[in-house]
Amino acid sequence: RILILDFGSQYTQLIARRVRELDVYCEIHPFNHIPEITSSTKGVILSGSPCSVRDLDAPRIDLDQFRHKVPVLGVCYGAQLMAQMMGGDVMPSENREYGRARLEIVDEDSSLLAGISETSQVWMSHADTIKRIPDNFRVIASTPSVEVAAFKIADELTYGIQFHPEVTHSTEGKKLLHNFVVGICGCKQDWTTESFVESTIQALQTKIGDDKVVMALSGGVDSTVAATLVHRAIGEQLYCIFVDNGLLRKNEFEEVLHSYQDMGLNIKGVDAVQQFYTALKGLEDPEDKRKAIGRTFIEVFDQEAHLIQDVKWLGQGTIYPDVIESVSVKGPSATIKSHHNVGGLPDFMNLKVVEPLNTLFKDEVREVGKTLGLPGSILGRHPFPGPGLAIRILGDVTAERVAILQEVDSIFIEGLKKHGLYNEVWQAGTMLLPIQSVGVMGDERTYERVVALRAVTSVDGMTADWAHLPYDFLAEISNDIINKVKGVNRVVYDISSKPPATIEWE
Ligand code: XMP
Image 1 (cartoon, helix red, strand yellow):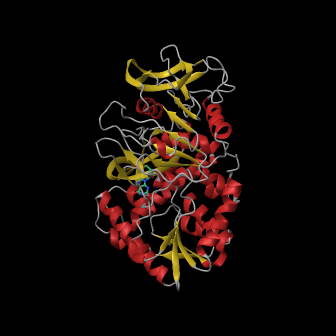
Image 2 (image 1 turned 120 degrees about the vertical axis):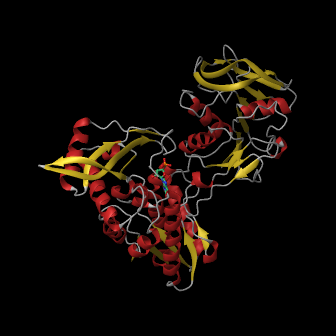
Image 3 (image 1 turned 180 degrees about the horizontal axis):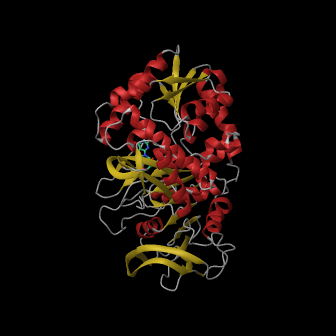
């Protein structure tokens, strides 16, 4: 594996993505929690940082923990930190440098830059620059404005680069990372989804043995892929639970339950609709609704899990971005926030947790799902929030409102599929607004509900743009909804981006 030490850069996850794209396994660890360097550690990459190495409270590390043991590559802050700690000077740049620059290769023989073209475009993003390097450093590349764009330390496999090879604007960045990870560190490119599936199934068998595992499935990609892996490992020792909370899409409970059965999973569908509606009764505040749904889910799940005798493990579809500890580097004592997404299931259940996907990024989970032969209908699904339609009904949730929204939502989603637009958007849904407006149907005046359609394009849901759906399509959907769904006389389309808006309305 390659260890990536995180100093808080926005690009750290991208470095990991690029290394994985080379079929090499890597892990991100915060700079102040460096794991032991073992024989399986083939190299270390130091990330960038929002801090300046000149700050008194800048994050620092003991380089001897890994230097001379394995090859090291410092990126931006990582490079500046090494230069400064070994006696060089890092100063503010005369011009803060953000954007494209042309690389001039000074040392043709450098294995880090092997095969990289003269004047290769690289992406710069820094306010500091290395002004003087220690005597045993050698400059291997410059740019017109940065003399020390890349360096190597003499007689050791330690390198620093001022630019960011992980962003696509560094056109040969991937080649540079390949040179480091494969050429210099000697990593084998054998980390593929097939090898992941094989080694994970073996590891799960060893870990779980003859024990029983319980998992809650949601119909989403992560929980389904996780359950399939566990099922391949231990078969009928896996007990899956799929709860109908009355807040799913139209017919979704039955359809997803059938897909799970077809996949051979040992799945129990639990009808808890009334329990959820009772818990939601009268609640209008979105956070109150979320809490009530979370609480009810735990009650239902706990009750069901207790029906399985001697269950020892709880399986979860947690993925890597949920567990990467992000580093907060704003203060003298760098603190670590952890983002463990344990689905809100509490400790009192006394179950050991097994999370087979907790080293994977979202698109890797999809690839694993493909390797496992999961149906496209599950792998290509839009994300759907845990609290479901409850947070798309603004205000109080009732069975009648859920039924209206399910109809509207179904017309929109089926329409997207019919017109080949479903896969063009990242997520789509509809909101039932708590207002009524005047309309006219036939000769009668109506005073009915307004629904909002929402469709966005996005990569990860962190930022999103409203999808520019064709007017003809919107016209058809609006017409269908108003004609077919009783109680709705107006349709609007949400044209807000995130930020400043969010994807959901609550
Ligand atoms: P926002 O509305 O924050 O949504 O832009 C970003 C993504 O998160 C989903 N979302 C949720 N998912 N529980 C979930 O499991 C929630 O409470 C929740 N709220 C929002 C949303 O659907 C979108 O994909």
